Image (cartoon, rainbow, N blue to C red; front, top):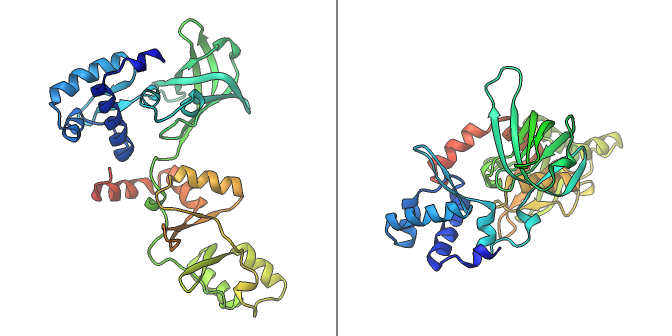
Length: 312
């Protein structure tokens, strides 16, 4: 921790700007971008970046689209995150988290093999805890929420490396709720809508849920499960106000998709109403939307929209 105290004011400024741009753009940051933001000579930024890389505060990404990315240590160095567990990537053996062991680096060393994919997991902690054949889960990682499932095939106790035969990898793209929330032609119902009419609206539009809005305010949510209950109890001539769920869960458009999924899982719901800072309903996000995103069905379209809007 002492090395962080030795950073110069310039180095701290560069780290803070690097982190700010990286959070904003979610991609490697060019030295020239930092130079422009700080009104400094690009050569000065390059020289300082070499020093910061030597301190393991910055990683370099090669190639035309490369640049610099902050390491987990960089966040602690500028005081943005305190406490090691808040930034460290966890590792699980079976269903149990391995306490005192954290992942520092993940390297996929074979991805083109037709029958297998392996990875080297650099960890901080005791590798002897793990044995060949152990089923492990790594993640989620801090920024991109990558989770790796695999089987331990070997280990290097000197360099603290686990060799993993990768069984599966999943990730939730680091984008905001507003990127995938349904906004246009949002279907909603008023509290006095007849249940039978609501059922027809659900059927005609192939939806499983809709917000209930009165005078511009969100007052509830109706789901397919609610309709099934009402129709099975001969309530089709009642209003949806009688069966809607009140105080529905909401989320703001600036939250990450990962946060939305975690909230849905914790609360056992399949959708969240997206509201702005004035609590006005602006969209809806469902578990199905997130699954399509993970599968890749939505990602190319969303990526193009973000690039067109210059948000990436």
